[in-house]
Amino acid sequence: MTNPAFPSVAIVGPGAIGTTIAAALHEAGRTPALYGRTAREQLKLRYDGGSIIVPGPVQTDPASVGSPVDLVFLAMKSTQVEAAAPWLSALCSEKTVVCVLQNGVEQKALVAPYVPGSPLLPSVVWFPAQREADASVWLRGKARLTLPDTPATDVVLAALHHTRCSVDVAADFASVAWRKLLQNALAGLMVLAGRRAGMFSRADVTTLSLAYLKECVEVARAEGATLGDEVAQEIVDGFHRAPADLGTSILADRQAGRPLEWDSRNGVVQRRGRLRGIPTPISDVVVPLLAAASEGPG
Image (tube, rainbow, N blue to C red; front, top):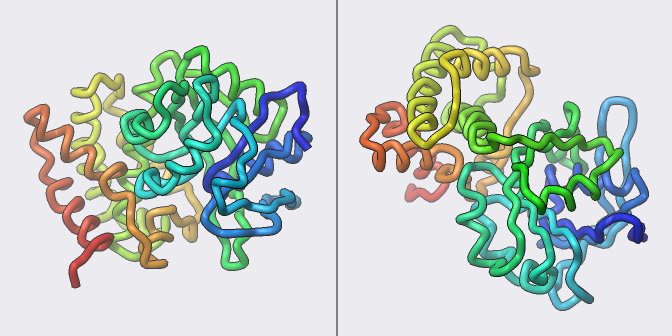
């Protein structure tokens, strides 16, 4: 049941990220409404030391929505935003805050056409959660979000107060978002290799990774992000420390034959680089290969 002391919450897209947020809310007594493409009776989040079962059902028909809510967590990928439009229309009023739990630095531009008048809040998701074969989600680290410093942020802070998902508020949100984008862009190499995080322990992959990230950093700076020269090495070091079997959502999508978020994670660097007149030779190889992996032909 919804706790009237907290905002009413709906989650659209209860995949790995959406399930994590749903579990954090349910554990704190603030069970959200669940909406998505696949009907489920419940969601399950597994973490080191236990698990959380979130009661459903996951509703699949937008007509089932009774009234708008205070907060929508949109946890669908950038390739699925158009499909979320009926849910957003049913769940949102001009007062509904829409928090986009999605990769990339173009969240507002992608989602805004579908929520005219609603406060729209981009986010950076900092936790590794992966879907398992039994449809449960394995949370492999602490859950944390970063949000911009806006009035709408207060609604998310209230919803997630004292839950297992912490929230940081960043004055320079753009720099945080670009830093996370660089991490996601590098993870795209896992698709091309068909390998998990252990591949980054190779010296030749490390060399390629640093060169690619330096290219990305230059574009990010041109877009207004404040990122030091050390960022590339820090991101590579993070992949070195990761479990060798740690995957990424874009690799999981490739293995399942689903469309890839290649444009929002990698293509954006190439596109913004061209607009700024910045050469992106590594992106010029990586991006078309990811696009072909996603869309073919062949």
